[in-house]
Length: 254
Image (cartoon, rainbow, N blue to C red):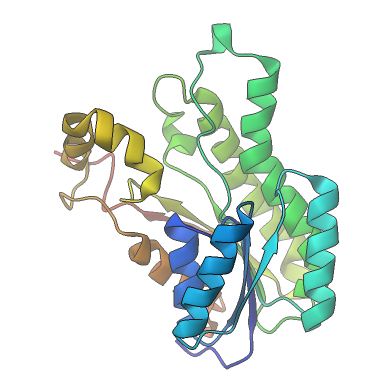
């Protein structure tokens, strides 16, 4: 990639899974990577791992669904470095499963907060610093559930991710005048700890998932990270308001 040294990337939810691989990839691309998470001990360990590979990295522990914590931490990061070049809104998740009839308002709000509020809170706080970035961009995460509304009990997850798809395009319109690009990735079934429970309790179900993927296998976190590496790079300087499906043709399986 054509990234110059010393660019600043902020990655939320980056202490494991896809987020950590994104941090590692962008670090190798020459970015100073700022990892966010809620497990401070794990965060410190991840910084050690990245530093051992010669990557400049820092950790900021805060809850992305807490507006005040987001504002404070992003302000601290922005003031420390003077700018943010890439914001990766990686934090999010299923948050559990519930059918609508039995769904509590608390559950509904918690899933929407985890996926949609977090994207809004962190992006809003980062915009003043992205304005000072070089080829600045925001990367959001949606899901195939944003199109097919998710499986049983995952309807509100799908709803939140459809919101992320829409807010990606809306922010791209809103921020174009500042040269800030906004894109999204939509990872398919990626082999991460996200699926540990079903892998251990229903291995036959986990194994069957690849049957719905054209390429016949699950994705790896590094394969999402490489797409994000491209999207934030100068090579993608004319890409905005796009959502890239990173799923091996998931949903089109034979």
